[in-house]
Amino acid sequence: MRDNKQVSDIMVGAQSLCKQVDNPGGGHLAILSDVTLEIKTGETVAIVGTSGSGKSTLLGLLAGLDQPSTGSVTLAGQSLSNLDEDQRAVLRAKTTGFVFQSFHLLPSLTALENVMLPLELTGHADARAAAEHWLERVGLAGRMTHYPAKLSGGEQQRVAIARAFVASPQLLFADEPTGNLDQKTGARISDLLFSMNEEQGTTLVLVTHDLTLAQRCQRMLTLSGGRMEDVA
Image (tube, rainbow, N blue to C red; front, side):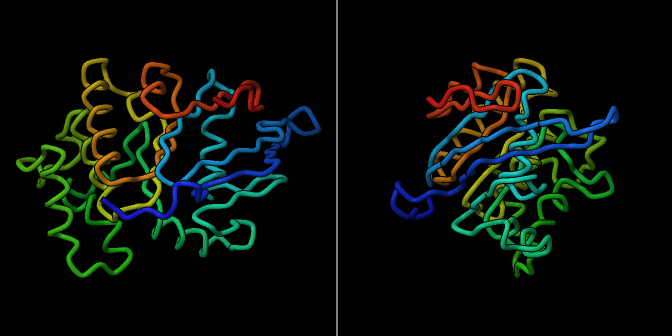
């Protein structure tokens, strides 16, 4: 497990965060309004809310995948507003892992090659061995040479989890990680995600509409109409 800094350290934070998009009918549509939050190093936090409440938009802003209209985001001690797009990408590669609802595996790469990719992009010297290790950890030792089209949904999400953890991220963003899975498979993936996250001491930010999944986190943040409704 990683030796974390003091638990009081803030891994990711947002201050007065707003996101607006152009409205086809004229004017602007507010997706997020005045969202302020802090997530401590090592915490597991769920962002919950109904469809359209702004959950995935907030995750994208916290991860530096998108930029806010106003407000600021701090990730791993760095203000994202002070970084350009390339610098934000470098910061994500060093600190952050992702698990998405739709898996986001490259169809032309095998399971092993998909997991190796983040390490190869950062010049890791032993990407293959590390990827093999993590695929074994998620129970896919016998499926490493299979392409995504030959894997079940649960297997694809296991590959995605291995890919997320292979670079030992400080922070893991998970966006509806069980949303495309049946209930039984989803429960197994949830167990795997939380057990590996606890073992690695990773900060977890989980976006979900599933309250059962969200309740496995230490805290829940509720969005309603783009505003933070409750901080628990």
